[in-house]
Amino acid sequence: MSASDVLVTIEDGRLTYVYDDAVAGLLTLGDATTTRVSHVEPAAEGGWTAAMVDGPVLGPFALRAEALAAERTWLRAHRGL
Image (cartoon, rainbow, N blue to C red):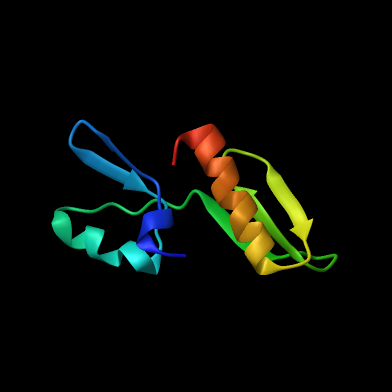
């Protein structure tokens, strides 16, 4: 993932985005609060799941990258991130 792949929203002077190392520099722009919105973890039955906080569990997916992609798709559709 590159910085150009990260969706950043600005509301009331605050930046909101899904953290990625590609945009770590945004944390230096002022006071920052990090909030967990999901957990991507190995699934009990094999593969990977993306458990959304206050939302569904997505998967299982064969690859971790698939779970991360589903996580981002869900966050864009349901949280505007």
